[in-house]
Image 1 (spheres, helix red, strand yellow):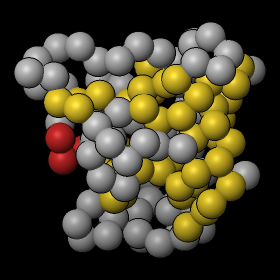
Image 2 (tube, rainbow, N blue to C red):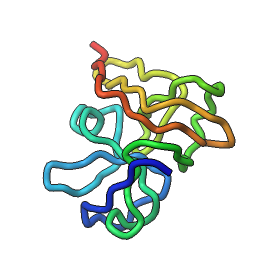
Image 3 (cartoon, rainbow, N blue to C red):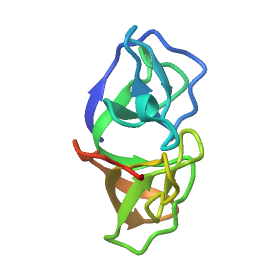
Image 4 (cartoon, one colour):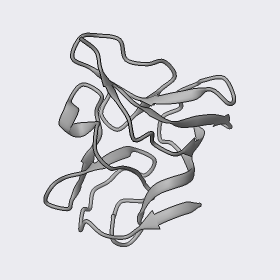
Length: 121
């Protein structure tokens, strides 16, 4: 539940994966390994279709992967496409971006992507 949009005409999405909005208005899997896939608008897919099921921009979400963080701890955009992780990426060229906070229950997060990000030198 939260702020949901239904646009992008993208199908074949994985519910619970994290996507970024491409310049053509479609959604593709976000990835901390690439600046263009991690620094823009992010959302969690609520089903296979962006227009039918919607994309969660902010709110409570059950992620497809469980980042296994401590309850209340930040979760970060992962280096595996579409996933979150419990620790910040740390290799040169990766992008660190807080996605929200872990609420437990095997992947439940408060999804609220920070507007700032850092590239590791």
